[in-house]
Amino acid sequence: MDAFVTVQNLKKKFGELVAVDNLNFEVFAGEIFGFLGPNGAGKSTTLNILTGLLACDQGEITVAGLDLAHDARRIKALIGIVPQDVAVFESLTARENVAYYAGLYGLAGARLKAAVAEALAFVGLAEHAKQRAGKMSGGMKRRLNIACGIAHNPKLIVLDEPTVGVDAQSREHIMGSIRTLRDRGATIIYTSHYMPEVQEICDRIAIIDHGKLVGSGTEEELLEVVTDIKTVTEQLRAPNATQLEQALAKLSVLPDVRHVALDEDASLLRIDVALGLDDITPLLAVLLEQGIRTEAINSEAPDLETTFLALTGRELR
Ligand SMILES: Nc1ncnc2c1ncn2[C@@H]1O[C@H](COP(=O)(O)OP(=O)(O)O)[C@@H](O)[C@H]1O
Ligand SMILES: [Mg+2]
Image (tube, rainbow, N blue to C red; front, side):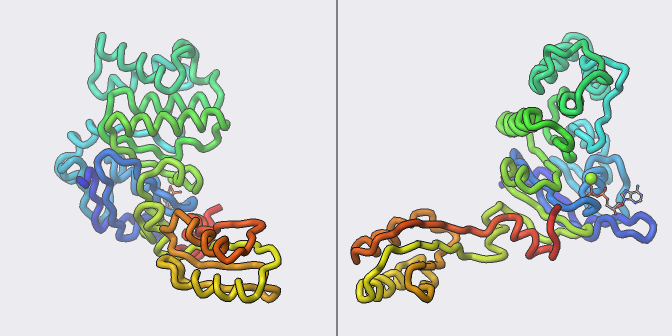
């Protein structure tokens, strides 16, 4: 996979505070890359450096093969920024706001008009084109903020906590729009301190804490850092001892089974299996073969929340 963005040895201090501490990561072309970390982790600082808004103390960044230190202007032309703090003009209408930002990227005339209309329709604000931003709800302003960042059709879209403070409906709309932008070919960096969102839309995730990268990869890869097993528990109905003994022996030699254990009254069976095992019918087949009946079954995989805790030693929220 091609890296569209590379960040190497990035450092940034504010006085004595180390906000970004030797950060390294790559964003592949055409993916949604999630940047996950608690408040103050250094996410916005990193993105502000990456988008040329803030100077770093040390490090190399490339975007589309261009070096940020030498080609900042060309890089900026490829990027669309959706800042954490909504940056729209309250006294301007939705259309005027988007036209202002798209104009900064050199769009004019008929092309500008078409791009503005398309961006507003994309975020579901076509009917509100003439409404002043100051009169909009929080969720609508967030959507307008996105329209302002994407109207010029950027190759790389950087969204910094785009769903903070929005209602459920706007959130769904925003999530869907981001997927659509990816499917149309854009590369996306998505920042959040909200785990379920990152889990829902990101192809790969970087976990950052105290300015440091503590883990990165697909959700599965991150989970595997913490554990490579999941546990299947089965509540058995009055199993016969001999049948049970045979079932345990057979289960323990199945390829993806790591450990089999029974609780004291021999009714709850715990089977540790490989994390990647997604078909548990062979486990059930063994029990069935021995005439053992199962009342209830449950499969517990570790989640990203557990992983985050294990990697950083603290809860996300
Ligand atoms: N302009 C600044 N001056 C001083 N400290 C800052 C500035 N910007 C951010 N910080 C500090 O740097 C750290 C990282 O902040 P930030 O990148 O905004 O984190 P995040 O976006 O992950 O919440 C925080 O401790 C924050 O207080
Ligand atoms: Mg931030």
